View 1 (spheres, helix red, strand yellow):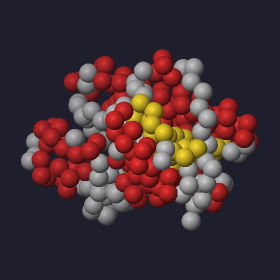
View 2 (spheres, helix red, strand yellow; view 1 turned 30 degrees about the vertical axis):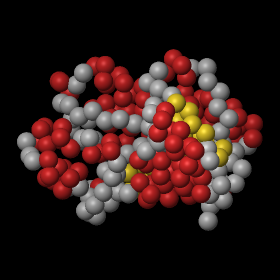
View 3 (cartoon, one colour; view 1 turned 90 degrees about the vertical axis):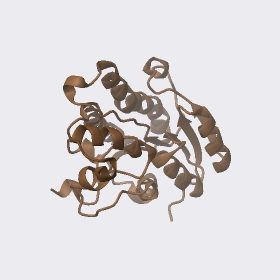
Length: 248
């Protein structure tokens, strides 16, 4: 069992989906968890239930994060959003929004957390990437670009942090059973010209050997291991949890 007693964790997008599952796993292992989320009420409810702290934050407001200082042993960059459009129809402001939330904000949070991690000689940066950090799919230019960038950021963090006891890794799930995935179904059906009830088997799971969605708790179990002492030699890595998608 991973013991995180005394550790301070920050989980972005922690009020629901993968982020909430990770926050629950960390809290059960003894960490004090800060739930960072745009939905302040949901963050407060989750933090109250887990004995943690809520932080209502808009990660798209990157200017507001530029001078931030974070006192966290464990940083989980999880917050994300999706927008499905062909490139020629992709709104530039939406492209910019996705990159701010999923690449610029993680950079700024890592930047804010590293000085404290370095001073303590311990830190874990866990970036919830995606199989789309390693592979591309049509109609997801911003998401794929942001996740590919996050992969590079994670590796640079690993190289700079290694001498200071800080590791940095990516988790790369396939489609996870979350509201973020459910919200894509209508757009995917329209773009591919198929009924909505065929999107999961024909689009989302077509490349996977295991024909089901990933569960948030499965992602959380890997994050929990990466946060613990047994993973202290694991850094700069990208762990797929995609049912075999990236094996093709």
